Image (cartoon, rainbow, N blue to C red; front, side):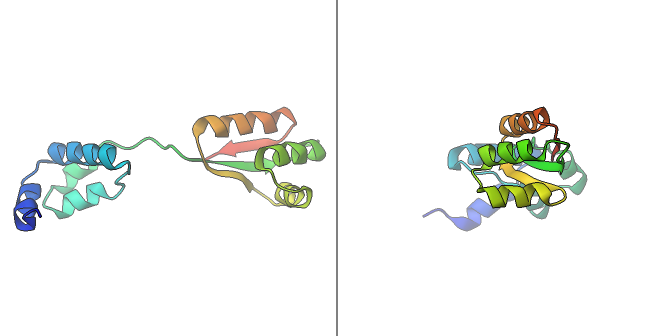
Length: 128
């Protein structure tokens, strides 16, 4: 087993750039993301202004929000059903609710595709 005290000392001596590189390497090795890493680095003795200069991760998950149904409500319901596999009643309820989330946590390509399909039938859609 690793000497934890020695490990803590070594991590405390890392520069901000070294800590960022370590974070990146661990994310790749373990297949995870460390969103709280800048806070951890700052708590480990890193300078707060330097932590603010850390690179910002690009957003990878998007929500597709139905802002307005438009004149073709039935066509919008059909598209919603095709995209989400919802039943008729659930799709109708989603379309009638103000600012409904059609899809949540999807890739940018999926969000753009969904937006395109809904706009083709007259709906107004935003991606956040």
